[in-house]
Image (cartoon, rainbow, N blue to C red; front, side):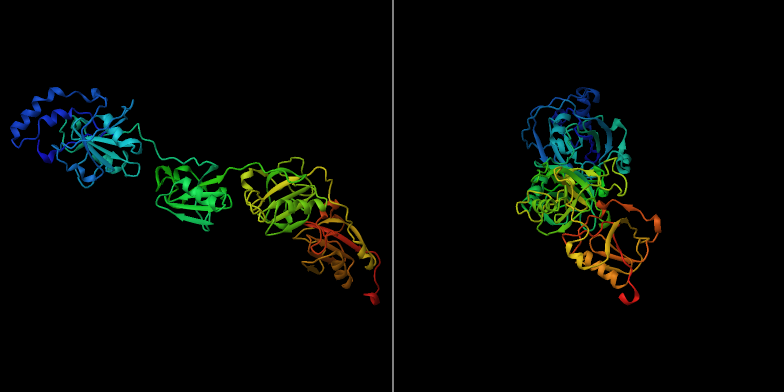
Length: 527
C-alpha cells in the first residue's frame, strides 16, 4: 500500500482493534507486488468489525500530544507499559471519516500508537477528558477533548464522512473510525465545603460581585473560595477560567442564565467549570439560622420597599455605619416596639406591625409589601460587628425580629407637655394623605429637626386652621381638608413615626398626617 494512501479508523473514543501485530510483522515493502502478497496472505487473520475484541492487555506504544504525530514511523519500536482494567462499554461507533491532513487532524487533542492497539486501550488512553476517540492506520489512537472543536454534526465533519467499507482493513489509508467515549466525564461545577452553589449568572456593569478580583492561571473554585473568605466576603464567583470575584450581596435573580452558558474549564482544574466569557458561577457561604437577639426572636428575611413611604416597618428609623443587632434592638425596645429589623448593614427599623405579604389577613390601610424570602438574601454583615458573625439584612432586604411581650409603642401622646406654651391647638386625628392629591394644600416645610411645635408655629404664623406632620420631617398647612368629608381617618397607630427632631413626639407616617387643628380662630389683629 502506497504511503500516500494511509487509512485511519476513527472510533469516537476508542481505536479500532485491528490485528495490527500482523501488520507490524509485514512491514511496508517498496516492491508493490511483494507488499500486496503480504497483505493478501494475512487477510484471513482479520475479522468483521462486529467481532472486534475489547480485551485490554499490556501494550507497547509511543505517545505524543502533537497533532502532527500522524507522520510517525510505523516501524517505531519505542514502548511504554500501560496497565488498566478494560471498560465494560468502550463507546458508540460514529462512523468512518477521511483524515488526510497532517496539519489539521479530525481529532487533534492527543495521540498514541501501539502495535497491540485495541479499542479499550485507546479509550483508556484518551480518558475521561475526551468525549471522542478514533483509531487509524491499524495502530494509531487519536483523541478529541470537549474543547477541541470536533462535533459529529458540524458541516466539516459530515463532509469528511465516508463509506464504512473504507475502514475495513488494517491499512485502509487516510480514514478514521470515530466512537463516543464511555469513559468521558464532562467538567462539572465543583462542590466547595462551606458554600452553596447558586447558579450561572450573566455579568453586568457594574460587576455582579465587584469587591475584589484575583486572576490566577492555576485557579480552582476552592482557591477562589479561600481567597474571598480571607477577605470576609460571603459570596464568590469564578469566571472566564481564571478570574475570581468576591462580593457582599447575592446577584439579582434576573441575571441568572442556564447552566450550559457556564462552560469554560478552570485554569487549575480541567474537570471543573469556571464560568465563561461574561458568565460567572456564583457561590454563597452556607447560612446558619440567625440567633435570637435578647428577648427578640428571629422571624426571617423579608423584602422591603426602597420607597421611604412604603417601608415594611413604619416606626422609628435609625442609621449607623457601625450598626449592630443589639443597638437596633435596644432602640426599638426602649420605644416599646415589638418588631425591629435591620437592613443594608447600617439601617434599623422599628414597628408595631410587620406588613407581611405572606399573611392573607393583612389587609386594610397598608398594602402588603413584606414577603418572606430565603435567609441567604439577608447576608450583609452588620457594620458594627468586628467578628463578621452577624448579618443585618441586605439591599431592600430586612432581617426581622419580634418580641411578643412588648405590646406596642409607648403612649407618648401626640403633644409633649412643653407644647403647653403654644395655645389653642389640638390633635385631631391620623389622616390618610396622597402624594398626588394632598390633604393640606397650603405651604409646606421640611426640616431634619422637625417637631410638632415647629410645624404648628409655621402654620400658625400663616394664619392657617390646620397643621399636619408626615413621615418624620414634613409639615403641611391648610384652611380646609382637600377632599372634605371624603378624607379618610385611620387608626392613630399609623401615625407612629417619631419626629426627626424629637424622640417624644409623633410626626405622622408614610402617607399619613398627624393632623392638628386650631381651636380658636384668630382675629386680623392677632395674626
